[in-house]
Length: 98
Image (cartoon, rainbow, N blue to C red; front, side):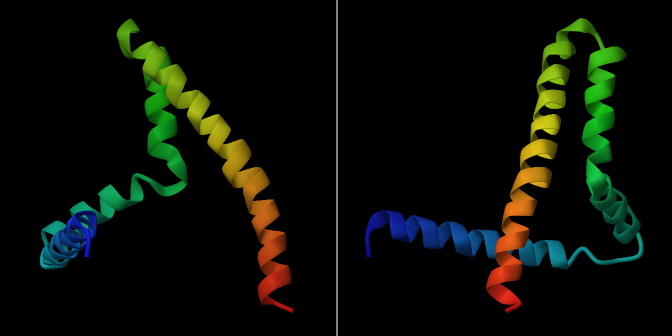
C-alpha cells in the first residue's frame, strides 16, 4: 500500500470517528439546536438572505463578497438546478426505469 493510501484510509477512519461522535450528541437540549442549524440550508434561504444583506445592509467591504455569493447562487440555479437536472433526469429515467 502506498503512503497516500494510508493517509486516505487514516482520514476516512478519522472522519467516521467524528461522525460517530456527532451521533452521541442526541439529547433534549441539542436536538432543537441542531434542527435549526440543519434547516438553515433548506432551499438556500440562509445564503440568499446573507447575500442580500451583504449587498444592501452590511458595510461596503462586504459588497464584493455579497456580489460573488449572489452570482454563485444564480449560476448554481441555472446550471445545477436547470440544465443538469433535466439532462440527468432524462438519463436516469431512460437508464433505470425501462
